[in-house]
Length: 630
Image 1 (cartoon, rainbow, N blue to C red):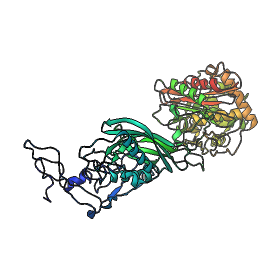
Image 2: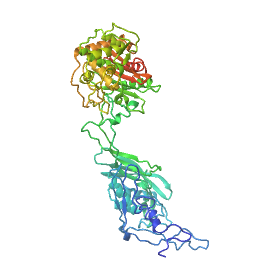
Image 3: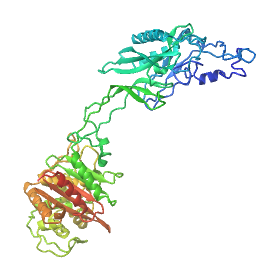
Image 4: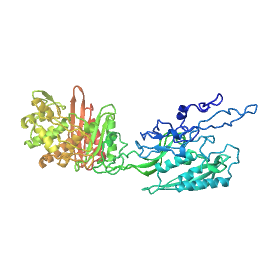
């Protein structure tokens, strides 16, 4: 009979391989799996938070097989059926289980749930096993006394005594030990709360209240539980062991442990502490914001239920937070109100599929107050783009000419066509021989700027003024990756002519050109930043005061009488603007616009948007109306 594991009528247990697959201890609640210890392959992670393995050690000499008599019925002749059947029962010598526990992934502590529920027919666990002989159920008073004794033993940390007061002492001892070690409360108080709704009339149920306190945590973890009482084989009232004795949501195969929570993600705010994560243009920017140097991230800890829960869910659930995770918060220079206007302005101008961007800067500080771009699926063209800025570059060309001795009132004829030797034309048809430099600027005359630039400026002068006085070409650090403007030295007169009107090989973006407008307004280059602790670049030179004054006068004339008058209409106070229209190889021109109003400077560009005063001008004016001060 020693080699026989089943008979023809009772196919309950198979060979030892099956016993391992079914959980090691056939018929017993165990540490994991279906019934008992989960074999020698170890424990699989119960959730996506802990990528570790835990192993059970079982010594071969700790396992023995004992006959188990079936009494599940008789045949018609009264003879017992299956009387020769035997069950394989594993008994651990001394009732000792050892589990190697490892830490990893989500959890700094991950404990294996050592309880399952197989009902009263679960096999031998010692003297506390529920009797199969018919007995009267425990009385209410007996059940209350048994529950009280169990809770008292558990409260004082006497795991052996508490486990001995259950119908499965070995399983209960493993589970209670795991709870104590892996949840690790400093103190545990369990108090009976009276009779509860019983699952069965033969098993009186009692409610109880758990209060667990932890080191370093001012609040206590409190929850309510229910346990039922049955009679053991020797007739004693004992607690029926179930996973829910530990916690009402704990089910077969689940784990409950103190685990490390994922590190908190720093969520930068605007300059007033308001959230920014709802703005489409900032979704890719905010994750790039690093915490301040030396700032620490606090790793949180919580009691976490993993694996199958009481409701059948396998999603981990935080039952109690011991230490909430925290990350240092960063206030950006952005203004949420202005950001909302910028987002809407760009959205309107890109509605027909035209890529667009806008940046707003505070001239007195260099702080970036808003940035927006479209389409959202592309790169952030507002700060990382590189395009020819068109006639908005004439601000820097005008500065170079003023420093070369050309005055705002110096006559600089605006021809219909000029040559470098390449032929150049204007948007405004006709010859205007009496135009001054200020007139050429306000009417955006290409030929006048090309002729006077080729006459007065040396190759490379434009790039020097752009770098030394406006900061274009320096290496900027705004707080997130950005692209610096480039103003390369021309290789010939055609390239020089193109650079004087912002075309050719010059590359800039809305960030760079908003800074140009801000430098004119304040008279000083202040590198734009998204965070005030960013390391700013410093221009080696300074815009001469008289040049800054003349530039402001020319930009004011452009805003009130020149090409920018339509979008700037109705704006009061200190205003100035410059339009830009960039040829795009036979396609619709790219629209550029830079302007300021009070302590607010804006640059906008719309690819294929046409003339500068149209698409880009409309977008920039919306922001100036909302945020500029007269």
